[in-house]
Image 1 (cartoon, helix red, strand yellow):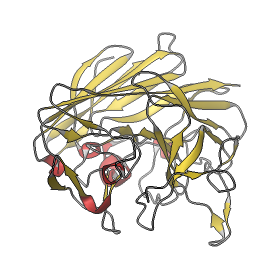
Image 2 (tube, one colour):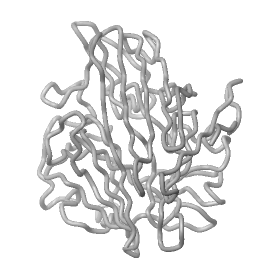
Image 3 (tube, helix red, strand yellow):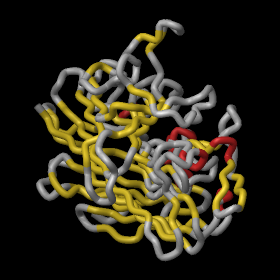
Length: 349
């Protein structure tokens, strides 16, 4: 289908591009603002089911850009302690946008806030491009970033990331969709607390009060972070007398290797009728349960996108890596290419 104008932002058209799997059972709408997945529809018992949080109009995205609905986070996703890092002996400062004094998703002008350019598209895929100039967000080097969304088969959305630079620079891209496999469209949607989560990780990276990893790798056994077997996301935090809040990185069990996918997580609907599997070539997955969400604008079909109505499965390099040399690193030099591949695979009971 031909791209359509979804709205205007800062004097530029924001385009919407719809893609479909060959058998028409799976469809997605991608918008250029934030290179975001606006809607993802997969086969379920009732027909097609929307499975990510989104908005029917551009205003919802603009008003809630800090929550990165469906968007690409970058140039360096997740947190950088104090917004500072050192590279090749030179110190760099990026924008601090967290009350704790740290940078998250590289500040308020990150990739999730940019209107990407449409590079190419066909019925089953779309490629978007963003050029981040030298010094943009405080990072060195002009970075050419590309993301390709495709629907290679029924129930599968593939996300391929690429980037090149003219100076040595860190880069870490991820997609920030909020998944709810019970459905995300309509006047009443469920929270995700009773949806069952499995994470293929034996360890996680604990954080301090500012959500900055301490540098430790801790066994999940005997902790609230043990999702080695499928269980509901909800777990009582007895100290606060409310559900435990997850905004943490898990150390994936399988070694990362470019282009070699391994399973990272599984999310099963509360009725057991739809399952999402996340496969990636990255070493970590950040689980964010959406507890802080307070969205005034209506979501898809008038849905209430609020407290815990979506959970993010963010595949990426471990957060805090720029401050911990023993963590996996993601720094590219001129002539090198950053690559990242993730698939979200859905199947109904």
